[in-house]
Image (cartoon, rainbow, N blue to C red):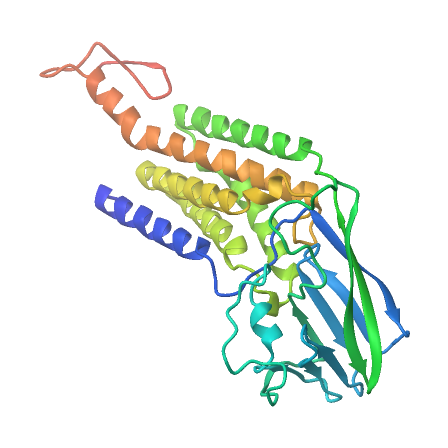
Length: 356
């Protein structure tokens, strides 16, 4: 691999990482300190199942086939229609539709979307299931609830439905959850430092430094994919949760192959890309390190452990790669006197190599 190809590879990896990390049009579930729960469905309606996704981010409704449900919007308008055939329809003239595009209600309502407008139905799902931001089910401010603290219930609200023509109220409460145990994140950071140190020690001895980065890249891929599949498509799970560590895993495989072939420059370039991808992934997921709830089915401690490890280790791997690519070769060149062979040259591993 030439320096030009290295530069192109790093640039491509950086562009892809930035593109994946850019905000998407959807507003996916993010880390939160609040947990919302369904505490009552009155009168009981066994043909529907309501649940909360992402701690407090989305309300999900699952409706049995043969049952018709209408979700009533914030202004009393028909908002989401679950038909008996299992299809789900959203009213494009409902003001609630646009308010719900953003967790904090920042969506712009067009002039045609009014409570008394004729419904304009758009099919959004099949199978009788749909999830949406319902602002009656979570704390709507970015600031903390005034006069309350962790452990307190911060809201109670009712989401009105019509189930087969009968009024049904879904009652939701939300609780401010205590901060998570910081130990997993600190341990993950220490593991990241240790693996970066191992990568440096391996390269100093002429061994494949990329081997030290591989376990962390695989761990990030597992955690990222776990988070991605934990949320339904309509909630906008972010592809970067798995794509960035997947690139790192591919680079790790390529780096190991390059080491086997004796292509150290290519192997170090792969390590640099691994470090970059893992560091960006860690930055994207950093809010989960201190939040009470991470929107994933994976254990919270595991997500925080790997996120901290990737963030710290990624930076370390990138530094090791830059040292091996640019600093170490310059030191070796300065160790050789101009115009002749040295009596001895200190190698990368620190061993003394006698001259011929």
